[in-house]
Length: 323
Image (cartoon, rainbow, N blue to C red; front, side, top):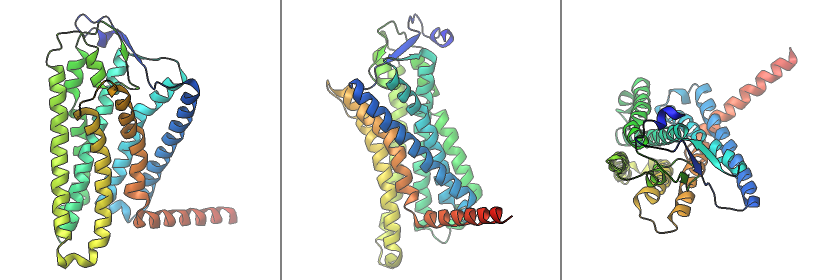
């Protein structure tokens, strides 16, 4: 616990206190039940998608579902980085977290968030190639290139934020040690640092801006070309189904980047901390629950694959009973 703290020049803080949600005890128990159910449903949804895609021979070969199954795995890791700790702090009166654990959560939370940004761009690229270049799509988006794209998303996502995390962890923290949040968000952490702050806040902002702006630009460009292609008269027959798919993809992108913009890019007033908690809770706990419903579980191909899987299971159980 003291090893990482010693990295901070002159730091006398070895742990932080997460204030969490400013609610009464009865409301805390209601919130505990609600978040627990939400977390379990999120895991069930994403495990279902991964299982269906893995066991269905048809879906397992389609690039879009390879991307979606990896996206589901990433979502499970994303909620597990933050929600169990949130639940634990709702039970205890004060959420005490050690200095190293706080920065570890900060790193994994931001790295998985970065990976999600790259996955959203990868899925936008997949839809662009499928709709705008349908004849070349099988050659451009092979299983090999799709897995290479997935690997790139994971690697680049986890290599994006080590520098800001290390720089902020080396700042001096001499008190107070109270973070007015339910997780180790860098903004309230930096507000606790002793001056001079150095370049760490600027570096964090630069990396964050570069990540969001580049991915948002790529997603808008991809879906922009897709929409322009779909409004052509020659695509009238396939327009409705494609527009439906793109609409739900854009909905997920809007929920994710809209909440991030509200959190980090829109200045807040005195009540910003409570608004920040609400926005963070939305994209930490609610969007991972909504994404599988939007992306996959309403999809006809997934429903058919799930039906085939359940049918095979019933047949297996009947044979077992007969034997």
